[in-house]
Length: 174
Ligand code: NI
Image 1 (cartoon, rainbow, N blue to C red):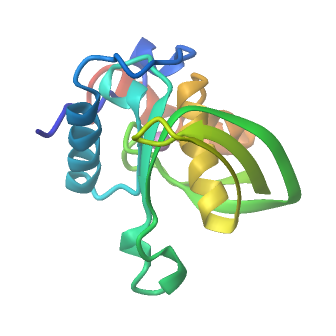
Image 2: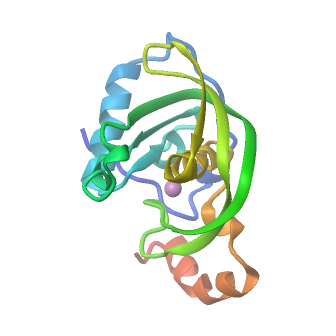
């Protein structure tokens, strides 16, 4: 089932999400729906707050990028209760977009490498290190469960330039 995506201006996107346990109702169905919603919107990542839930859960599938970069092949993952425990390496600027902020793409500075602990869809504990676009995408989604958006990280000048677009989004004119 395709779920409605919450857009910029909606308070859920600014809440710090909380951990869930294995008893969370209909979790498998929720995860399936999140993937379906993400694919339908041509996204490569989707976090629970974007569909109105303040829980620490996000999904990523980099398959659409595999055509140009085979290393992204099969990178379909569910992150439950994640904690980024290390961010290292060079600070890299790369253009990002977000399904909750349609029509806006801006360069964002992020660390090159992260170490993340999380539970997968079977609640198995993982402790992994990711670099380049894997790390980029995970950091973007992770921000969502911390109540942060990529536009928080762009320069004041750039923010000024997109202000009217953002204001229109708040007023529901997208
Ligand atoms: Ni996003």
